Image (cartoon, rainbow, N blue to C red; front, side, top):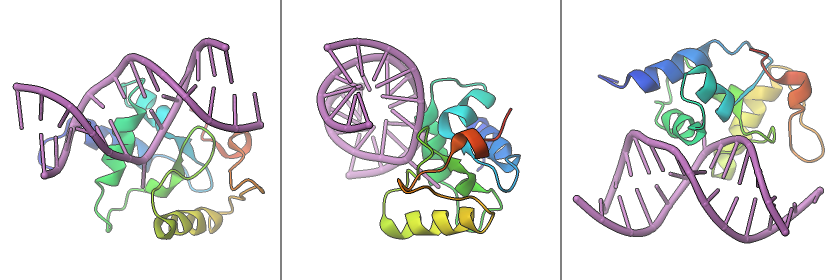
Length: 103
DNA sequence: GCGGTGACGGTCG
DNA sequence: CCGACCGCCACCG
C-alpha cells in the first residue's frame, strides 16, 4: 500500500460499513469522492490481501447481488453476509431497500 | 506506449 | 423485465 491514497480512502470507507448492512460499489465510489468510478472500487477490493480487516464482503453491486467471479468466492461472501443476519431472496439478491447502508 | 480486461452502473429500446 | 451499449479508469502483458 505504499502510495495509493485512492485505495486507502476506499478501504477506509468500506471499513465504516456497519455489520448487517451493505453498500454498493457506486456508493463507495461516491463517498470516496470519485463518483462514476465504481469499477475502481471493485479493482481496489480485488487487490485486498486476504488477511485484511476491511469488511469487503459488505460491498455488492447495484442489484444487491454478489459480483465476485468464481463460485468459491461467491459462496464465501454470501455466508459471511448471512452470518451477519442478511437474507438473500429467491433470486440470490439482497433487498438493498432494507439492508443498504444509509449515508 | 497501446489495447484488452474487469468484484460497476446508468441509460435506452 | 431483459439485454445491449457505453462511459469510466487502474492494471497487466
